[in-house]
Length: 181
Image 1 (cartoon, rainbow, N blue to C red):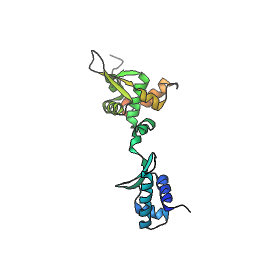
Image 2 (cartoon, rainbow, N blue to C red):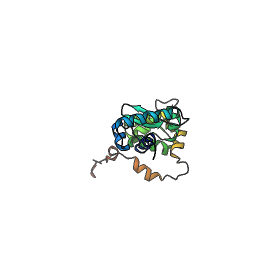
Image 3 (cartoon, helix red, strand yellow):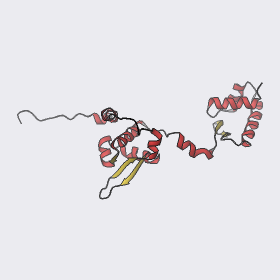
Image 4 (cartoon, rainbow, N blue to C red):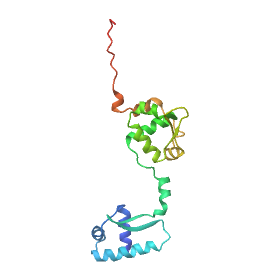
């Protein structure tokens, strides 16, 4: 039979989230005191290992997680989550290669200002001032290319352009002129 600390380690690994001690004890089939003793043993065990993982107590409960010293690896390996609007704005910038912020706002609407700010913060877009212009030039970065690996993919311009449209973009122009004019 496995020792209780190993069972708790497996529970933390399988759940992948912070768990309170009562839940851990229930899953391990033991009382709370035994779970607490085994948790302390497990935490001590990880503190003395040369491991990328650690067991920590958070306000939400105990969790098995990557040590903070590996944050740069996390940033490289896991792309940040960005919203659908920002993703569409990113696609527009990538398709154009480089585009002025003014042209992008004309294409995507005023929400593009916030999208650009978000995309610059996560490192997917570079924003540079154009000489002789009040508008910034926007380009995707190397991080974008490393994250999405789109260099060798053919992108059908019309299919991608269709995905960039938002309900606000779909307002149809009406011609109010008559044939007699």
